[in-house]
Image 1 (cartoon, rainbow, N blue to C red):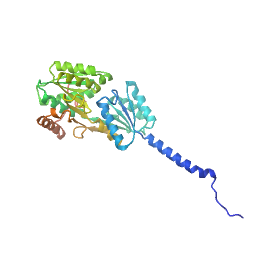
Image 2: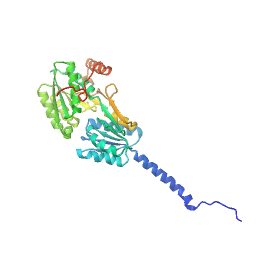
Image 3: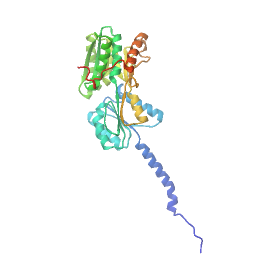
Image 4: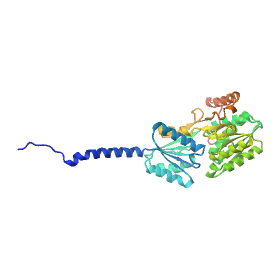
Length: 336
C-alpha cells in the first residue's frame, strides 16, 4: 500500500492570493465608507463668512490627518434632503450640515440612517445619532457692541442682519445690549436684508442698508449677514466709517476700516466633529472659545491699548458671570 499523502486541490492553493486581495478590497471599501462629508449651505464654502469658517475647519482636519472628505454646496432650498441622503447612501460618516436651515432635512434623513453619524451647526436636532453644535452669539455680539460704542464719535451705531430669523435677532440683541451698557444714550439703527435665503448673498442690498445708516449719523456698523456683509464693508470703506465683520475673521476684506470681526468658531466646531464625533448638544461661548473678537495686523492699529483693555474687561466680566447677556432666543429679551 502506498503511503497516504494529503494533497490540497489546486484551486485552494491559488485562492490564497485572491483571498488576500479581496480582504484588502473590503478594507478599502470600509475605509471609503467611513469618509466624512460636509454640506455647505446657501452662499457656498467661499462666502468669506459662516460657510467658509466651516470649510477652514474641515481643511485643517484634512491637512493634519491626510484624509479626505466629501462635500456639497447647496444652491437652492430644495436640495438639502437629497444632498444629505446621497451622502448617507454613499456611506459617509459623520455627515456635517453647516447651518440651521438644514435642520429639518437632516432630522428626516438621520431617522432613516440610524447607524450613520450626523452633525449640524447652529441648530438642535434631538436624535441619538446627531451631534448639535450651538454658539452663544449674543456674548460675542455684546463685546463688539461695547467696542462700537467706545469708538463712536456720533453716539450712533448700526446693525445689518441677513435673513430675518431669531438667530440673527440674537446677534442684534447682544450687540444692542453691549452698546447701550457702554453708552446709555447711544442710538442703534438696525435693518434686516430680507426674509428668504437670498438675504445671505446680496451685497448690493447690504451696501444700500449701510449707506442709509451712515446717512442717519452712524459711524460704526456690524453686519451679521453672510455674503451680504461684503457690500456693507465696501460701503463703510467708501464712507470712511468703521465696519465689524462676522463669523470668520473678515478684517482683511477692507483693512483700515474693519474695526474687528465677531468670530464664531465654526471652524473649531467642524474640526472637533471630524476629530471625534459625539452625540448630544455642545454650546460654545466666550468661555469655551466659541466666540470672540478678532485682532490681527489688519486692525491692530485701530485698537489702541486703552480701548483693547476696556473691551477685554467687558469680555472678562461675561466669562466670570459678572455680566449676564440676555439671549434673544431663550430669555425673551430685546423687543424688536
